[in-house]
Image 1: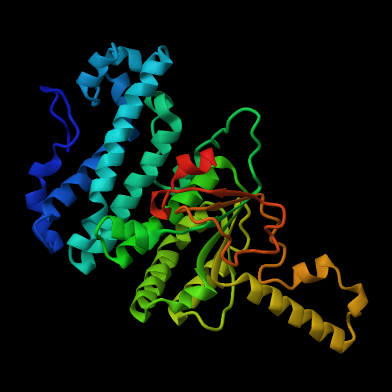
Image 2: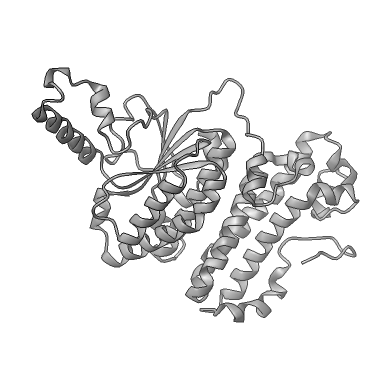
Length: 383
């Protein structure tokens, strides 16, 4: 919606439109209008930040005038580049409101009919991705704006910088922990936590591209996760398969190569087919190597490599006394995967959980209390 130029703009005005939209979404419960309104306002903020440079150049300012007055700023100051601290504070205030709206809107997919959930899921993800970009730029967003969410526009974004004196790790691995706890803390169902975790994974891929990381490996499903309830597994596999298929074109256009690391004989067929398609489709890409560990266990991987080497020894193609580290490495699930430079585990747990024991030999380890769905570009850059 276009803001009236006759009054001071304030975010959070979309509640009046929600009653008109909600009936089309098949609402469940009395909270649906407020949730849809919050999502609409979050998307509106993404729109405002995309258009900031053009609007300011044309003399239009859609940021709250009260914030400008508090900071002693005039609309003309926003393009001047001066008073950087005040401009950063101005943007930070909007980011705080934006984050609050995103947090408020999170349950929206559970408040509508199942057929409408993918649409709202995509809207929420888009607003989160644009929030990440604005948080990365801070006051530079006033002059640079936020590029539209298209692969071509995303690919043209210049890599973000890190703090002086800090080297960018070549290979980052992430144990994505905390989806269910994140959901319980908000009174949501487990499937909503897994969907939020899926959005966080796409945000992570986008963040790795922005930061210039070449190798990213994520722990998506471990051999121990088979102990979960059958219905949760069915929901998890279906959501993962849908996400893989829906994101295939986006990943390919951005130059991401996807590899599946783990056992391939037990996963639900639709998910296995989606992962195999992603591998084949993105095989020739080299901007970012994304390794997805599904039905993965480090001890199983090492045991399988040992069996392969034993078979070679029995066949007489390899002498046992000649076996070295390179031989074992070539028999792992994902041969050629480089050593991990930085391992991140979310949700406060401080253990490796049978993840990449071979590749983690020299890694730096970072355990963060953030639950996985809350992990975004800012957190990865800080790590």
